[in-house]
Length: 152
Image (cartoon, rainbow, N blue to C red; front, side, top):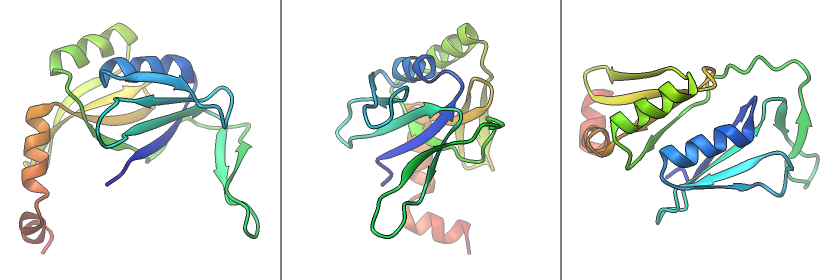
């Protein structure tokens, strides 16, 4: 189970607030890295999304030191990193929020297996949102016996 992911965006506070709205959760300042935020849907899994300023990078520490924060002065904002997140929000609510923000929102079918809503934060970072109905499709496809059939 993935408990949290991190993303970097141009306006971390605003993106964190919008994600909190979509996730029916709350955004908090992320004290280890000022200017960053943590979004929690406040679920039983401890799910979270760390939202960093665009130029933030995590790099390995040396020896027995943990990772450190660094800055990339020329970030593009595009990344292959994304996550599929189950939400209690409806497709209509997600679309209204995306329209309000001017962000791309598109319902898609992934290879005839399950549907997701591509929710493009700042039109650069994709989060796949799964409504309750979509989550049920995803969970059915990803049962071990079904995965073995699909990938063999």
